Amino acid sequence: HELIVDRLRAIQSHHGWVHDEGVLLTAETLGVLPIEVEEVATFYDKIFRREVGKRVIHVCDSICCWSTGAEMITDHLKKSLGISLGETTADGQFTLLPTCCLGACGDAPAMMIDLTTHGLLTTEKIDKILQQERAAIAAEG
Image (cartoon, rainbow, N blue to C red; front, side, top):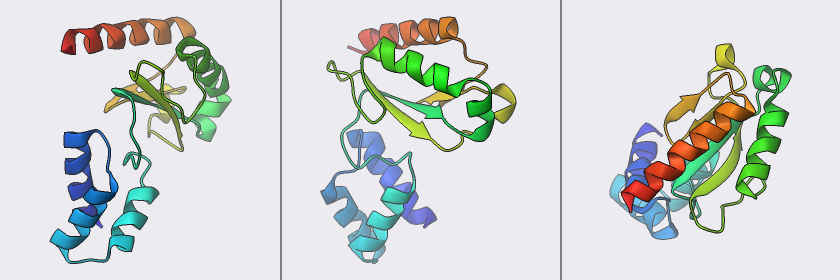
C-alpha cells in the first residue's frame, strides 16, 4: 500500500486532490485493480477524493484533544470560517475536516493545517494562525 499512497500523494500534490483519473492512472502504473487504489485512497484521511480548499484544516477529535477542549476549538473554527466540518469556505481558501489523531496528544487540543501541526490551541491562537494563513494565501496570488 505504500507505493499506492506515494502515487496518490504525488497526484494530490499536483492537482490538490485525487480525481478518478488519478485512481485509474495509479492502478494502471502499479498493475493493481482500481478498487485496490480506491480502498487505500478512502482509508487515509489525508488523501482527498474531492476538491478541497487551498488550506486543509484537520481538527483532532481524539480522546486527548476532546478532553482538553477540542469541541470548543472545532466550534470556534466553524464560526470563524462560516462552515461546518466537511465543508470548504465559499472563497475556496479553507476546508475543515475532523481527524482521529494527529499524534500531538501532549499538545492537545491540536489541529493540522496542511502538514503543520498546531497545538495547545486557544481561540486567540487560532485567530492568529488563520490570519497568518490568509496572508500567506494572498501572497501566493
